[in-house]
Image (cartoon, rainbow, N blue to C red; front, side, top):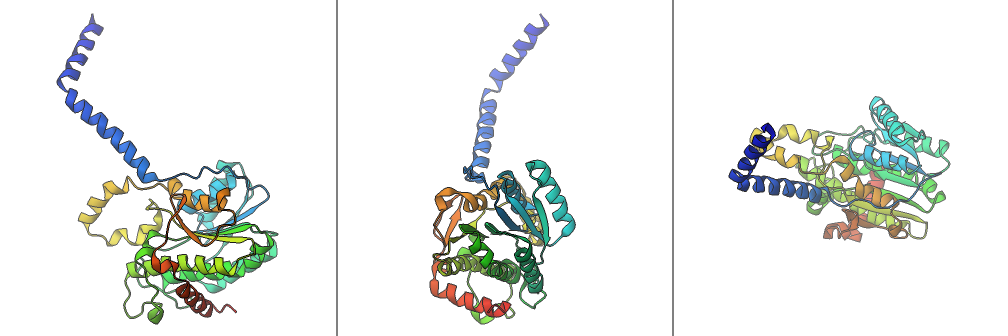
Length: 331
């Protein structure tokens, strides 16, 4: 009898609140669908990387760590090239445990130091027999007007010049290991970027957003020029937009926002990509079979996307290459 009255009360509740229940269910379904839409595409490739070597900069956190975990799961020897040894070692331990692949090693590099980049490249050349995939993932976003060890503006120095030098120093090993790939993590921010050739370090008019956009456009242009220079070598190059992601990359931006902007942004932050979702296009560019022989293009959500017009300008790409080579002392 007691169960009967419970069922009756439940039935009455449903009848009295039917509209609210329907709205709540619809909202829940819509929220799930919206989160899946924000999550973007997933790399479906099952390519194995046994007996191959992958190096990822900034692989101790965020999408770099998720990419490293995926590469390790495919059987690769994975090199985490990071600035913080303690955090990188912890990440390596976690990746080994999660993937069951013990062939995960840590190498130290500070992309804000050209000497540190050269030291890493020399180490890799002397100790590694091959390098099949180089993923230039590390980056800094919208920091104050800081300088690298060599006096360059920090975002341009880390996001572009450090990776420019590292990649060039490792080209012989990449060619030796061909077919091989270079993957440059750029951003949608390149679409509003401009290379300020007359003030490359933005000493006259620095703004964190302007600097970040310039560095991300440089990633796209570097990819295009490098692809042109590597034709016929078996080394292919890709740049990509990973999406808007919940990572540490925004740590310099978030504290600068007014409280009201943070309150408005917080609900939206719950909808954007997780690091695992954000890593999918990087993984796609690194392993997907359909990209064999394709080089120099820009990708988003595991598909080719046309870069901004300034990112497709060959004359600008060549000019940036020449300037970058001069800045890092590349012969």
